[in-house]
Image (cartoon, rainbow, N blue to C red; front, side, top):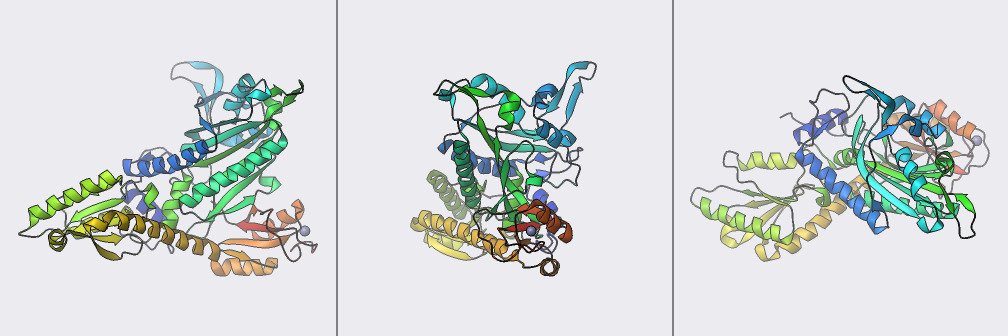
Amino acid sequence: MNKLPDRNEKFSEWYDIVTEDAEVIDKRYPLKGMLVWKPYGFKVLKLTMRILEELLEAYGHEEAYFPMLVPEKIFAKEKDFLEGFSGETFVVERTISKKLEQRLLLRPTSETVMYYMFNIWITSYRDLPLKIYQTVNVFRYETEQTKPIIRVREIVRFNEAHTVHRTYEEAEQQIKEAITIYSTFFNSLLIPHIILKTPPWDTFAGAEYNFDFFTVMPDRKAIEIGSVINLGQKFARAFDIKFQDVDGAWKYVYQTCYGVSERVVGVLLSIHGDSRGLILPPNVAPIQLVIVPIPHEKMQDEILKYAKAIAERLKQYGYRVKLDDRPELTPGSKFYWWELRGVPLRIEIGEKETKENKVTLCRRDLLRRLTVAEAELKDTIDKLFKEISEELYRRAKNWLESNIILCKSIEEAAKKYSELGGGILKLPWCGDDSCGLSIEEKLGLNGLGHNPEEKAEGNCVICGKEARHYFYLGKRY
Ligand SMILES: [Zn+2]
């Protein structure tokens, strides 16, 4: 067990230690960028993805499954897509003893796999809209340094939704719906975020445009947590996806897609944690309540009996509960164990609680104690879960806001960025590609995009023309 470094001062070290010590993942598998998820971490991932899947279903998406291997000739149909993914797509060429008849690719994302089938499925306007999603593993050969959960070569849970529409307007409407779904999802994970339209030179391969969701990590770097993409008709033309419209004419469809991966779990662990370990939002905590009996010489049996009864009752209420009755560990070491794993509420039961039919609750976020009567337990827990969620969101929102800095010139931006040691800068921008690229170059930062709904004031920091947008920049994961 390693002592945790300060999360903000030494974020990278903190992250590497906490993800292993809290039994989220195990990095010892001998393949770079491929992680073992331990049961505790995997449960967080499953609970997280379930929220998204339920949201997608509530908005009319249906779950399906498409194969992991893609024939190369299908993958190559859309030229920008092929070019965009060629460097990171794994190829399967043989079995151990035989060469295959054709080269097969491991999906880095499933556009080409699905759209081959959409060509077969869609013939009439009655088949539209089509809204499909799957949560699967995808593979990308990352050449940059890998980072557990956040930058990996096997993305274990990639939730990708793909939609098909009759008209451009309908597809644009779908983009808005997708943004609503993702915002709701990230909010439910207590991850404040900004939504930016990606600069044209960084747009997803094969797309018309895309919106990315960003937040700021404890090391003040920007991180993309989700992407919503308007594909227009590029793939429809490449895959010849046509439908017969009401008027009898054959037309190409319009498409969108959007994706979120387990990276969002890496982000939620990072932004809610502290120097004692993880702090999990109650809705994705594998164990929401841990009960720790406090030993007492004479009352040992009664305390344990009472603790068991409380555990049973809480399970009946529907909470995910764990009674930690390991006799070999002291209460102090149990507190440490569960604080590291981020259990949102701890219940302590000792002599006093047992005699008085009470329990003592301790919040993981504030480490504050409160004793309540058994009869008030459920209401109190519900109230505390809500308060914990609000507190975590408040902290994260303060962090994000304090790391977005409006600057009026390149010089000011460079100065503030170095003073703060990171963050996201926003500068007035005329909207021209050449000025955007020039801002990136002068600051040595990645352009993240702009918010089309935000009104900008001032003049473009490069050409001096009236600003149409704020251009957001930062160092990104
Ligand atoms: Zn300009």
